[in-house]
Length: 124
Image (spheres, rainbow, N blue to C red):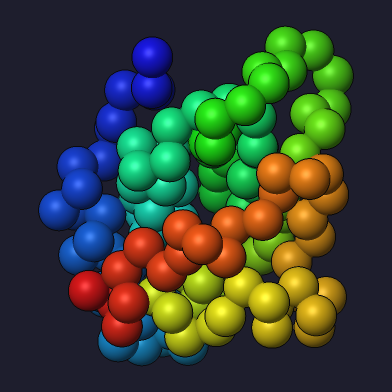
């Protein structure tokens, strides 16, 4: 069963759109809302619990069907900063480029999100 959304899809999309319009001018609260909302959207679009996506300090989501982990560090982890994550979400940054540049840490066979990102190309 997927986690219950705290941020509606519309509010998440609007937050990502606002961030995309002025990434440098987005304050911490606006960035946090965009990250958390987009993580919830990812978990809804790609349900599962085999990959953990971490965007510290703002949020974490589990997604992608497959073996479920219950204790300790999961075998499939994606971790990045907020600006990189939101760049991936909007399509301003490609998955392969972000990984090649070291802006995304992806460990595990299932920790590849290039097929599901961007969530909202161009900020939707």
